[in-house]
Amino acid sequence: MRAQGGRARRRYDPDPMAGLSPSDLAPGLLLGEGVEIGEGVLIGGHAIIHSGVKIGAGARVGDHAQIRDGARIGAGSTVGSYVSVDPGVVIGERVSIQTRCYITGGTRVEDDVFVGPGVTLTNDNTMDRHGPEFEFEGPLLRRACRVGGGSTICPGIEVGEEAFVAAGAVVSADVPARALVMGVPARVVREVPDSDLLQRWR
Ligand SMILES: CC(C)(COP(=O)(O)OP(=O)(O)OC[C@H]1O[C@@H](n2cnc3c(N)ncnc32)[C@H](O)[C@@H]1OP(=O)(O)O)[C@@H](O)C(=O)NCCC(=O)NCCS
Figure 1 (cartoon, rainbow, N blue to C red):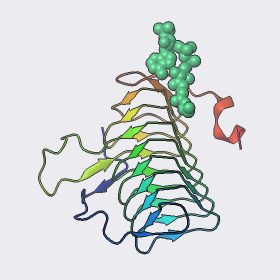
Figure 2: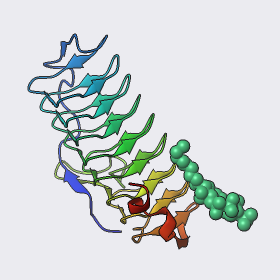
Figure 3: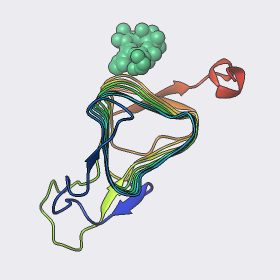
């Protein structure tokens, strides 16, 4: 297992609600200071977007989504309803993150990634038994990979380009590019066929 995604130091903001103000862009929406919202972005009700977040043109943020400080959402991406995005997470362009996912600190999501509903990304193998210098290791989701609903990706794991994680998998080792992995723990079962590659669908 390698640290691939990114490292995050700070875990808890002393006051995560500080600096949030109501906005008339959507009912119940709270916006932090210095949030940048691109052209044509759609934001659902009761979302909370913390300070310093940047959202690229044409992106969508679902109802009740929470995007923490300094996170980046690329142009044309979707952050679904009830999704939680941790501080400093970087999400590329045309990414789809479906309902109720947790995108943990230190995660990097490259362009054209698909994350199915209820996916959990994790960043701390000690589960909080560590000193103050501990660096959280988020996963790295490479370009155009697909992560099936309800799966869990362990800290520091890389999911390769165009890889496919089957629904419900627990991914505890890096996934090679174009591999289809399945199960608990996830094992490679076959290669993603040419007919499934993103270039055939764009
Ligand atoms: C991987 C997937 C596409 C099924 O692949 P498949 O090759 O058609 O699977 P099959 O139905 O032919 O099953 C092949 C074997 O794998 C097993 N299997 C299928 N899906 C599985 C999964 N997700 N986890 C564990 N085992 C699985 C089957 O039970 C079967 O086992 P058997 O040979 O012992 O009977 C499907 O399980 C999946 O993960 N889809 C993603 C859905 C999703 O999350 N979409 C997100 C947007 S809604």
